[in-house]
Amino acid sequence: MTRLRAALLSPTVRWNIVGVAVVLALVAALWPRTDSAPVPGSAGTQATQQQDPARLAEVAAAANLDPCPAADGPRSTGPLADLRLQCLAGGQTVDLATALGGRPAVLNLWAWWCGPCAKELPVMAEFAARAEPEVAVLTVHSDPNQLRGLQAMRDYGVHLASVQDSQQRLGALAGAPAAYPVTVLLRADGTVAQVLAVAFSSVDQVASAVDRWLGVQV
Picture 1 (cartoon, helix red, strand yellow):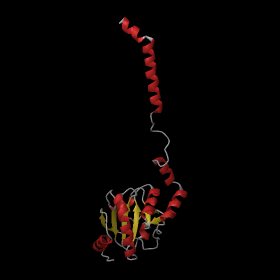
Picture 2: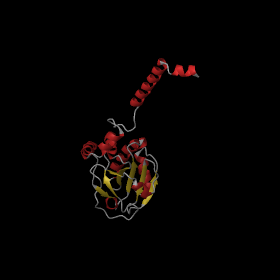
Picture 3: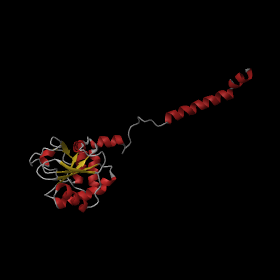
Picture 4: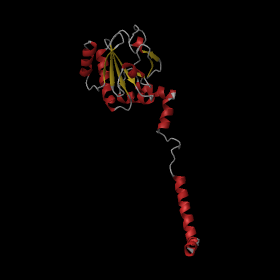
């Protein structure tokens, strides 16, 4: 026991202990912390950007989306009668009951991170060009990040009118599943004819669904 105590108290052992302590201190000082400031391109920076009106306006101008439908139709009485959403590009409030009232409508729910949505949105744009003015087509960005939604539309080259639904209220009111893309078919009176949780790959597929569930041939 005396020899062990003497060995522990020797200068060599003491310096070894000090060396280990210094190394551990350096590791602790250099270890990455979760509360560090966000780097460019991180989630924190993106959250700041998406709330910046100047940045939103810049990307909205580049996306060049069609204007959201004006509230000049008869007021519908369906499940969306009291729903008001923000236009993705312009920022103005859209009263869906009067903006879509009076004619059948195709509402395409999507999100910027959704791969199938990226392929379906150009199909919806082509269908809209074919179906106007008999059928209204409106896309619904169902993710809180409005900036990302605008950037996606810009990158896809799709100029369809779109509203921002950060809280996924439209899908809940229409009884849509929490998956994207989802297409909600509305009758002229605002009632829901069908909810289709599928990704359309051609204009003819969309036209066939509109013919079947809304009785409109385009």
